[in-house]
Image 1 (cartoon, rainbow, N blue to C red):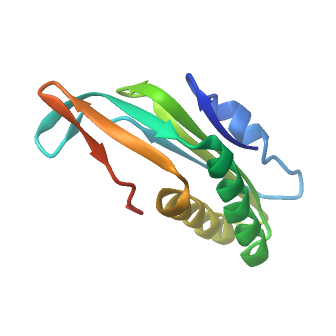
Image 2 (image 1 turned 180 degrees about the vertical axis):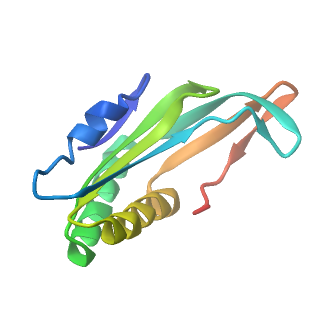
Length: 136
């Protein structure tokens, strides 16, 4: 499951996409809108993406992960307005053991932030600014 979609994200759906009865570890990363950034009160985030490019890049990241670790991975990124407290990205990873699951999960979010063509606009009470993705 690699998608870019509008509207609230279903964490259970993304987690379900990586279930494997032979794997003993499942991690779900959920990136949510926080209510502040560098002294500004955040009202919401706005995301835009190029889905025709984003989805293949997500799939490529997953292929790289499977070359390094025995794992399953699903990534879904939201576009449009994302209110405070709601998810903008959900990444689920499963693996036979926790160590490789943690490593693979970290790789997934870091590479998504670096390479997937998704753009974020932070909307504040006193204005807004487009933000570049960063791995942290």
